[in-house]
Amino acid sequence: MAELSRESGVAIATIKYYQREGLLPPGERTGPNQARYDQSHVQRLKLVRALLEVGGLSVAAVRDVVDEIDERNSTHNVLGVAQYSLPLRQVEVDDEARAWAMKQLAVVAEERDWRLLPGTPPTEALVSVLCSFRELGHARLLTVLDRYADVADRIAEADLDSVAGLDSTEAIVESAVVGTVLGDVLLAALRRLAQGAASRRRFADKTATS
Amino acid sequence: MAELSRESGVAIATIKYYQREGLLPPGERTGPNQARYDQSHVQRLKLVRALLEVGGLSVAAVRDVVDEIDERNSTHNVLGVAQYSLPLRQVEVDDEARAWAMKQLAVVAEERDWRLLPGTPPTEALVSVLCSFRELGHARLLTVLDRYADVADRIAEADLDSVAGLDSTEAIVESAVVGTVLGDVLLAALRRLAQGAASRRRFADKTATS
Image (cartoon, rainbow over the protein chains, first blue to last red):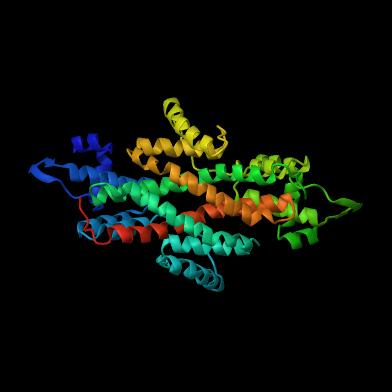
């Protein structure tokens, strides 16, 4: 276990905790106080750490992901369970507002063969944002929805390209989670720089008016 | 002031606080305990609230934005001060890592006429993400950088389109801040749905391997 800790960079106490929680299978017993760990344990450890620390998943959600792997479900299913569990910002909305938002989202999703799953963070976050736009008096910002959705398809293709070559489901899921969570920040920051350039082209010569 | 509070939906105590902090100009005195407020105060209030509550800016940063407006700087400058102040997630990085990240970002920015401003949230967030990719052993995820940057330009065009028709700098900046902050979440959530569809196309028939 000391060697596993060294190779993965995860502390021994943390490894023991993951084992107690069922996130990491036991090593092969070789003596009363000895167990053998192999490369699959190193990979699993990296995945669990990425899900918990980078992704912000709960221990229960991480257990769902590793169970999917252990049941040898498709890489798509494993990836789905992981990605759909990543937390996103959401607010409470009432039934009327939710119905209004879901109706608009259904159109966008159906056109693109996307699956809206009520109760999961992506769908709940979308409902929250649409309702917030309306409540803050910025319903006109919803005109961007279709263009954002087109762009999201292009981003997703880039994302999948960047992990498709990896050689195990664990490596694909780990990389996808890191790429998704940090990629959100990457995209947000690049967008600010691009907005700066676009604003310069449009507004640089216009004096502020109030 | 009671009427201003009613029309803007901002509590009287909050309006007084904004005035003490220099975020909202005084009304026109009409008596010892009376002042007249007009539509420009309503607009300013909405902007200040969006910057503080949606954008998460500090009071000092909000003051910079309203000062730019009052000095009648260009809409581009006001928008730049606001957008470049929106906080983004960042981590500490050492000098070597920072130099490595800035070098890669400089290439991306120069190609697109973007301005990298060290010390501002967008640039610091980009440096953080690039360094985190490398530190977590996922430097290959950086292959997405160029494609993300292209997409960011398209998003920025959609963003500017959605606010360009508004009739005052305050309305443009307010709407841009709301659209940028909530748009980050919108984009992140749409990306998850698009990834789900892309993953289905690529991985649905592949059994998990570890």
